[in-house]
Image (cartoon, rainbow, N blue to C red; front, side):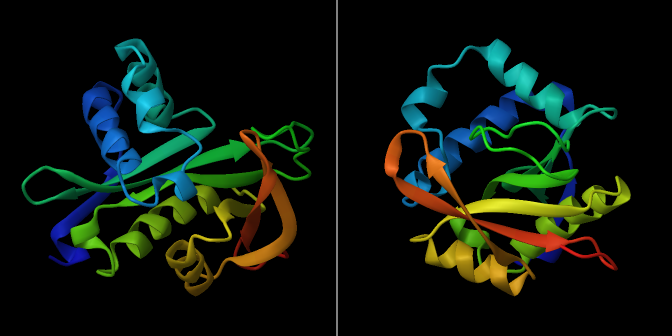
Length: 188
C-alpha cells in the first residue's frame, strides 16, 4: 500500500476510541521504549475520560494542539502525529524554558506495513502546514539518539539538531536530542 491510498486528516473529538486504539498499538511497537515517554501498561489503564479529553484537545479548532491521522481506504488508522503549540515564556513538559512561539511534534507513529511508503512525510507535511498557518517560528521534536530510523527520517525531512538535549524524567542518565525546522523564510 502507498501513502496515496490514505487520507491525512485532523482527528475529530468523537473519535476518542480510535485515538486510544492507535495509541495502544503504537505503544506495543518494538521501539516504543525509545519513541514514547508513555508505556502500554500506563496507557491501557487510563479511563475513557482521559481518551475523550485527549481526542477533544487534538481536535479543538481554537487551541494549542492538533492531531493528524492517516486513514486507510478500509477506514483503519495507520499513522499519526500531533503538534503542540508552545508559547514563549512558558516551560515545556520537561520543565525547560520555551524561548519562542513554536510547535512541538509528538506521538509520531506509522504502522509497520506503511513505513517507507511516504506516509510519514505526508503526515509531517500536514502537521507543518498547520504550524506555519499559525505563524509559529519553528517546529521541534525530541528523539532518542538510538532511534536510528526516526533520526534518519527527521534529517531527511529537513530537521536539524539544535544542540539542546532533554533529560528523561524516568532515566536521569539519558538525554534525548532536540531537532528543529524553521518556518520557511525565517531563521530557526
